[in-house]
Image (cartoon, rainbow over all chains, first blue to last red; front, side, top):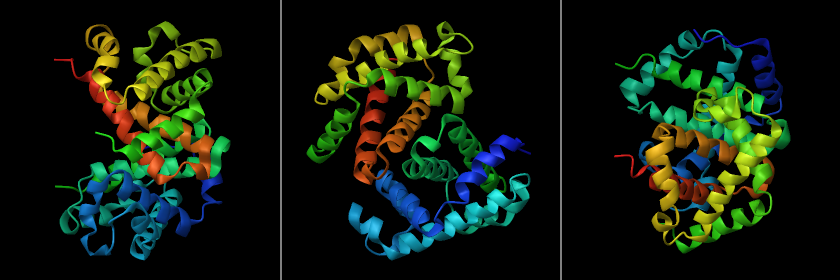
Length: 147
Length: 141
């Protein structure tokens, strides 16, 4: 079990309270699909992903980004219990979605970059470290039930 | 490897860094060491807790090398040959560390440029830095 210090939890929660989940979620997923185009392999039914503007403006991308980031919000409520919290989602990503867990790391990294664009100097090295620890822990929790 | 558009994006980002290599480099290293402490094992000469002067000095050196790469996008291998030799023979930084440095670089750019750090800039810069990392580790074996 990953242990988060009080400072790490504070760093995460203080930013999270001010995150527009819909906006940031769409931005994160959109950037993932543009910067690492091979991740588009999971989204054949999302319609037009043919250009950067098509991807960033795609309503399915935005909706799914919001869904994914909302789930992240759940992680933040259960930072001491991520493996159990994500057990079902882990099975889903393995058995039904067939997603290589490497993608969870890519998405986590993208969350940090988008947060940095929004929070600028406030996204200090210590804040970045706390968020990196969280995204890594979530990625591991999502991979935990793979078989 | 990089399209004309991507080169333009890389040059645009570099314009913002040029002249501030020390500051950007220091912040890059500070983030790298804070977020990925194991990377400090490659910088024993900076001590357990690198001071600002050391970070600025080493940071500037690293960013100046990035600047060399930016000026030689058509011929990275030739331009970076001495550095590639250094990394293969002396430094031998495990290749898995380069993505960590690249991630921190993106965070530095994102936090400074904010909305101006467009997705195209991020994509081009990521592709460029990944290419540099390939060249730097290519002679490892």
